[in-house]
Amino acid sequence: MSKRFFSFLGLLILLFSAVSAAAQSKSVDPEGHKWWQHAVFYEIYPRSFADSNNDGIGDLKGITEKMSYLHGLGVDAIWISPCFPSPQVDFGYDVSDYENIDPMYGTLADFDRMVEEGKKHAVRIILDFVVNHSSDQHAWFIDSKSSKTAPHRDWYIWRDGKGPGQPPNNWISTFGGSAWKLDPATNQYYYHYFYAQQPDLNWRNPTVEKAMLDTTRWWYKRGVSGFRLDAVDTLFEDPNLPDNPALPGVNKQGDPNTDEIHNKRLPEVHDVLKKLRTAADESDAVLIGETWTSNIDELKAYYGSHDNELQMPMDFMFTTVNKLSPPEFRKQIAALDGAGGWPVYVISNHDITRSYNRYGDGRNNDAIAKLMGAFYLTLRGTPIMYYGEELGMENNDPKRKEDVRDPIGRTGWPNEIGRDGERTPMQWSSDVNAGFSGKDPWLPVPASYKTNNVAVESKDPNSVLSMYRKVLALRHTNEALIEGSYMALNEDDANVMSYLRSYKGKAVLVALNMSASPQKVTFNLADRGFASANLTALVMTPGVSAKGMNVSLEPFGVLIAEVEK
Ligand code: NOJ
Ligand code: CA
Image 1 (spheres, rainbow, N blue to C red):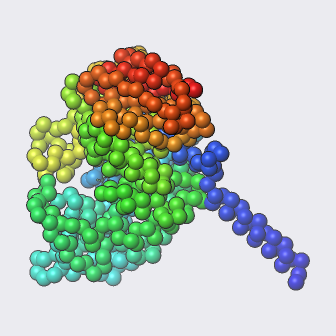
Image 2 (image 1 turned 45 degrees about the vertical axis):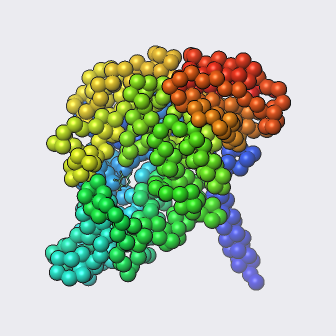
Image 3 (image 1 turned 60 degrees about the vertical axis):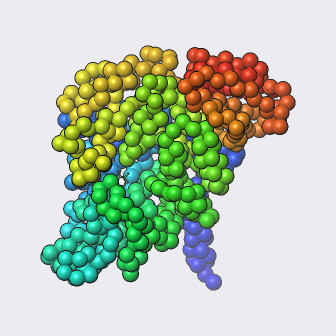
């Protein structure tokens, strides 16, 4: 064989090893953890975070200007809800071009500057990839609906009706009405699990799959560190379109309840997630999943059988506890912690009422907000914060139907009031419009912005913000909190949630009084390797005291302490 052949072979081997080395995600510690396992994530709803040009709507330049705030807070990665071109029917979740920025948020050059500024402050950028559907204004759909033989016809899901005026089956859109819309031009129906302006993409078409995978690679090259994948549960439908079984009652939009067995969580979803993961691994990127599961086995499936799908499926079952119940939380944490994957904890987002209102009792909400922060930021796993949670931002729900911006709030009023309340502008200061914008913002801020804002809370060592800053600083430096195992303590206690995070003979104990009365607790860590121990407070609220292993906590009091042998 010729010398030239051997040098060609050598080049191939070199290339192959370079590619596979790039494909291997790097570890950041001796435990083999990856960057996203050490990171704190923070969701930004871009319309509402920071408005650089005073038009009442947040933008990318605004985010760029706040990088130093984010870094100072202890945030390592921001997930930005969709900022791509969009008619904004679902405020960005209806994407009309996957590879651009909506002019209301800026330009691709602004995006690049944001990535650069993020790098300077060690803040990575995660984008929101709306995989299930596009906007009906996307060029793909405009072509798709133009004729039955259009090149993009099969990029979406088109079917004949069952008969005149009858959709193909009984599937219901989660945003109200039938999930099928008749298009008179071709007299066929298209499928939309969400709004009619959000037609579902046909992932059974390999060209669609390729276009979407290419999009992720395009953004990775632009400096993105991962994606939050929107609505993965609904990627596939049974192509035979059987009716879903009926369930009793109606939902908030007045539609009959059905068991969505034929259009949710189909096994094919996992094939796509594996391919998205392969592309992510090439760039050491992370995939976060919007995974609304009803039990731990469904959630487990999203990690993939060989850790080859989502690294970070969000555990929304945690958000459904909705009350300060140590027994309920223990159950949820034990299930997730034992599931084998890396836990991902979330307490708020742009689709659910803020944690401040869900857990607050109306009198001690700031104390409860501090307690909730001290709680989920000290669990084993990666937390995803929601902007303003660190301030104790509350929901500002519309009081009248005519004030509602979110379409589901208008069609479902008053049973469903929509999601405006949890999407109001970030509260930066006590200035007009909470310092968010010189112009009236797209949604009004609540009166509580005067007290719960960055400027005021930065000066108060006992504010919600100060608690978040302290806990976040600790979780970046304390090995037991970064690497340690989770062990529930005093499991019969109905009022105080306590646990130990321990690593290589060192431990941190967390005790959280989830009740409105003072509590005394005693810990015995003899069987956890600490025969005689003392507690040294790392973070605590003012009314806490610890003597030996005896702890007194004021109502909603917090103690995070080092266990000294
Ligand atoms: C989930 C998103 O979080 C929500 O805001 C959106 O309306 C739906 N997916 C549809 O994209
Ligand atoms: Ca703006």
